[in-house]
Length: 459
Image (cartoon, rainbow, N blue to C red):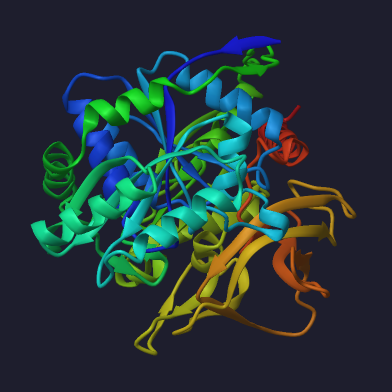
């Protein structure tokens, strides 16, 4: 067992929409600007918030999720990334105690696992003394969660702030920050949540967030709270990296940006060289032994994706040659025959998945799922179990005999549902997974790419 002592703190909320992302992004920007080595993390499977974190901190933000990744691997990742940081700041998900079934991967569960103190963000709009009951209830609900203070948000005036500070004093709850309402701090939103960082004037927004933190947060007290985090005792295995055996090209641009860093790193450590390409701007896919299309917002770039005919033809040729092609969510949509946008118009896509994707106005599926593989594929054998999550607004229109990839079941569902397309060298579905949490799937993808590589070489 190794003892780990580094400053770390979780910024949680009473519920979604209280301002966690704005405050955490501002804190990251502030400490980065002040010369601190700050490491960001995000509880849960979200892809978008970590993009804001990375822009503010100057390097990658990582997800902490005990459904997607086993707890021991999560601890290893956290320690490996935090060991050289002056402070690790972890943004919570939803409300402090919200998560999967039995609170799995809730912010509270991660706080206990990492032995990390918690700062609770309180939305004070239209409330005065009553907010103390909220803070007190969160503190008393689970004494195993160490709430060391609060940050007040959306205060209406100096008088309002003084009132709330007074009542927090009565319950002996330290106030580490007090943000007044500021529309300039609002982050743009769209149907999947916050707008990706590549689509907004992020540097200006994040700079403003950092300035707000310097004005409204007691950063010395915040840092001191993080420094009081007690020791963690963990088993740390020696890191290794296998010889590169295959090259996998990953679609990465404005339309496709949903990737877990640990998932791609797992592939790299186990023999894959990862290169990137843009389905929007590049003419063809690069020379590779396999393709990965992650999630994102292809529905916001339909004209550009449809118009890049040479790229679509290049992907079709790869599929015809037997190259392994793996796609998740937005990647699945792009590989379909067409996408029907929110405007009702259809846009021709790659066409190697025999279905039409249709955007809907309401969320179709969300949550953690466990899936049984129905057909052997490039990442799994029939009967294998995979764990991941779903979050999508689109549906598929398909014909008879569609080769379903999975039977997926949510943590709170009694019955499963058929999902994904699996046919020879192509696997495309709405399932988001992390290869470090599904190591057999990652290993089999590399093996599939290696077989293809050898077939090209005539071996």
